[in-house]
Image 1 (cartoon, protein in one colour):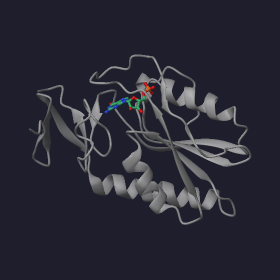
Image 2 (cartoon, rainbow, N blue to C red; image 1 turned 180 degrees about the vertical axis):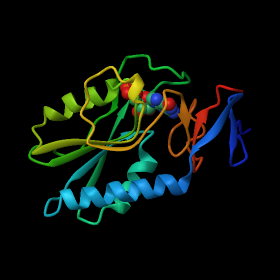
Image 3 (tube, rainbow, N blue to C red; image 1 turned 60 degrees about the vertical axis):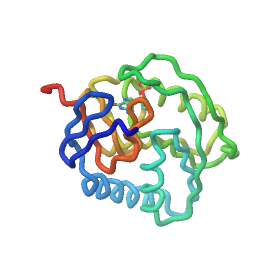
Image 4 (cartoon, rainbow, N blue to C red; image 1 turned 90 degrees about the horizontal axis):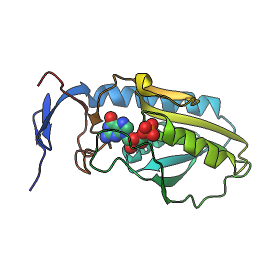
Length: 188
Ligand code: 5GP
């Protein structure tokens, strides 16, 4: 039985109320902009996008379609929050990258940067492959929560320090299929 009850404006998920924060058109427009920028900045190159599973799958799919130059894709999976809303501070690798990254132009694609721990981990991890260049893209940045020094090259939206769901982002594995992004409604 589904635990998501939704109108467009408000969603109940695992008994908690979330309000709409970024609608699908706003997200799509920003993703197209980032795609255009990457296409310009990497003209004549063939970058490889490394998506961080599971949360980034929707963003990376849209981003890739917004890129007009040749580009490749691969995925890495890190341990998630599980059913928690607060980062545990531990990062564990659950799926490794198959592609060879040495001398490649690599762009790490994340759904959200919170503490920055996952992005920091991936930067260090992928840097060890000696790519020709290494940049990062994240759809969302909870900048007030970020404790690590992370280099963020392409940021979709800087957002409040509250839990968000939808457009690939889950709460206890559900809510990823919501087309808009919703934020925890603390006033509820
Ligand atoms: P960090 O390592 O930066 O603390 O956390 C990064 C990962 O935590 C993200 O890739 C995402 O999976 C998860 N995360 C952080 N904040 C949120 C949030 O507000 N909502 C959801 N659904 N996941 C989040």
